[in-house]
Image 1 (cartoon, rainbow, N blue to C red):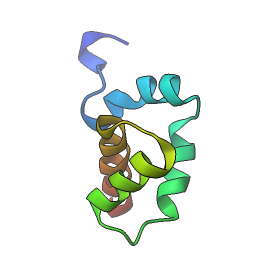
Image 2 (image 1 turned 180 degrees about the vertical axis):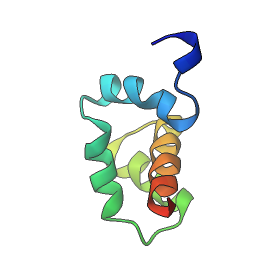
Image 3 (image 1 turned 120 degrees about the vertical axis):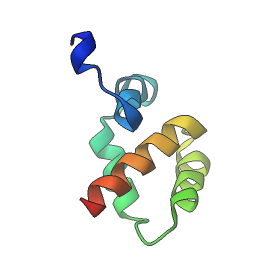
Length: 71
């Protein structure tokens, strides 16, 4: 990856999320699908409380996943 192709935004957290929690981001997106009716911060709180994911990582997963759902 060169400086020109550097990943920005929520996706920039994905490598550290996968390393920290030992699961691919697709795993977390599938879990978010199970609570898709909840609001953004409710989904973040769910990942934090039920899966012990840190706030920044949970927020990045939710933000990216919600953006993909709207696309």
